[in-house]
Length: 197
Image 1 (tube, rainbow, N blue to C red):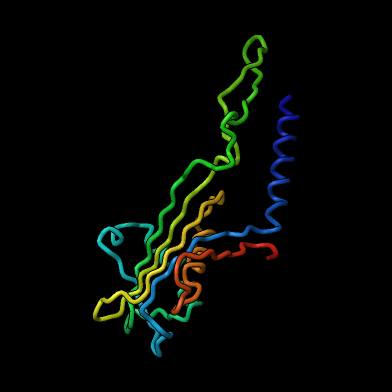
Image 2 (image 1 turned 180 degrees about the horizontal axis):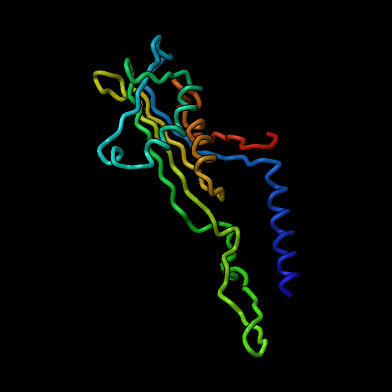
């Protein structure tokens, strides 16, 4: 019984991994607001942190994930002579999956043991589709030294991917699409993660 359960788990893992070869289309809901008409001649920036971000050990990693998207949008980091400051925010919440089966909370683990060799049932394990996340990223660009906000953009996504190191950079790319003159109103921006588009 144990051997057959291991074989079943291995088969399920192989199927899951083979699906990764095709990639994943990350659909983002994006809305941006701009006071800019073009990328300026000196598009330099530095990161800005509010007090809570200054003591957050994850803020540096978050800014590192956002930096490539800012560079691809035409901005260049220069802490010594910045024209702009950029504040980076992100939030990830685990939510109930829209695909989770409300009538079946998962599977049951089956075990064999004890002095008399009795079978027993363990606690239920969650469905794979129950891992679902709502993520939001925000970038706020301020002109220095006036501290006037000249660009603000937001991207949100709901999906099953677990690794923020993969998802958040793609969301920052989506948020910066159209910089510095983005389309008005909410829009959908798809980013392909791995595989073929």
